[in-house]
Image (tube, rainbow, N blue to C red; front, side, top):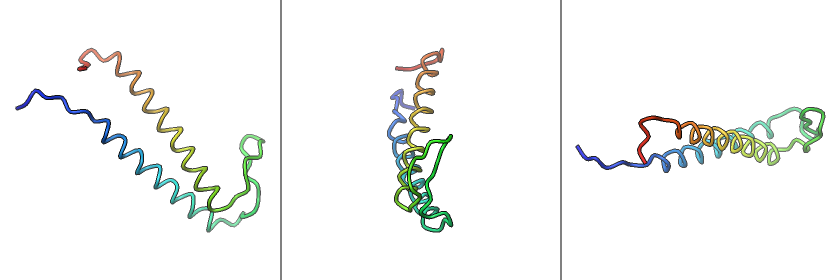
Length: 87
């Protein structure tokens, strides 16, 4: 067996990109089939944007990207405290 360490970052990056693209597709579908087309989406009382397929896709992609960046940052931070950490 080899002692070579292989980074998993490319796998995580490819997975994240796939998830963000899927979220955009779901947002596009929801925006196209939604009954509230033309109404304004408000979050916590703040009006964000008019509901349309493109805006729903962009909102889904932005929200998914934000959540994934937060999760990956937390995992990176927590891995610093791993006693068996290999650099």
